[in-house]
Length: 355
Ligand code: PMP
Image (cartoon, rainbow, N blue to C red; front, side, top):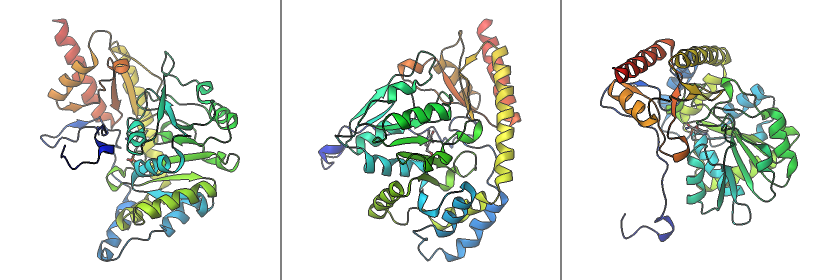
C-alpha cells in the first residue's frame, strides 16, 4: 500500500476471483463458466463490428435493449445493460444503500456483495443461512434494509421459489429487493415477470454463464422504470460507454439464438445429475443444486486437500476458506468428458488414501 492511498480505502479487502492459471491446460471447473463456446450468431455479430471500433459504442445499447425487451416481454425503459453483472450490482449498491439503508445478504453467498458494500462505505448485515444452507425468507422481512439475494444462491446452488421471494417483496414495499439470477437458467424460476407487480424488485442477470460470454462482460438489471432510471443516472455518472461495441453485438447474437442457450442448459443439467450420482456413489454428500455447479463434501477428505490433490492432477475446482464451508468444494458442471475426468481423478485420490 502506498502512503498516497486515501484513508477511506486502507481497510478494503478486495474480492478474490477464482484462479485463471496459465501454467498448464486445466480441466477448469472453478469459475462456473460455460464449457461451450459462444453461439455462432454471437461470434458473427461481434466480428462484424471490429472494423468500426474507432467509434464509441452506443451508450443507450439501443438494439441490444430492444432485442432483450422483446424476448422478456418488457419495455425498453425497464432494462439497463452493464459491463458484466458485477458492474450493475455496484451501481445498485451506490443507488440504494447508505447509512439509513444498510445492505443485507446471507453469510454464505456471492463474495462480491460485502466488497461492494465496503467500497461504497455502506453498512451491511450478513444473515446466517439455516443449518441445511437454505434461506429463510422471514429473516429478510425487517424494514429499512436493501436486500441482496442470489437465486439460486452461490456457492450452495439452492434456489428459493417465487412464492418465497414474493413474501420478501410484500413484507416491506419500501425496501429494494435485488434478486441476482446469475444461475437461474439451470433450474430455477426467474422473477422477471414479477417486475410489473412489485416496484421494489430489481432482477440482475448475466451473459457469463448460460450464454457463454463470460469474457465479453455483459450483464443487466430489469425492474420498474423508475428504478431503471435511477441506475441510468448512476451509469451516466460513472461510465456511459460501459458496454463495448463487440460485446453489445455478441449479446444481440446470443439473444437471437435462444435455442442454443436452452440446449446447452439442458446438457449441463443432465451432466449435473450424472455427476451427482457418480459422486454420491463415491461417498460424497451435496446440496440440492439448481445451478451449473454442485457443492459437495466427503466425510473422509477435507475440502482443501481434495482441491489441492485435484489441482496437481490438472483439475481445478473451487475451495473457500470460510470456516462454515471449508469442508466443501464447489465444482462447475462442464461437458460429460470433463466430468468423467473429474470423477476418475476423485476416485483415484480416494483409493490412494485407502492404501
Ligand atoms: N452474481 C453471482 C451470484 C455470481 O456468481 C457472479 C459470477 N461470479 C456474478 C454475479 C457476476 O457475474 P458477471 O460479472 O460475470 O456477470
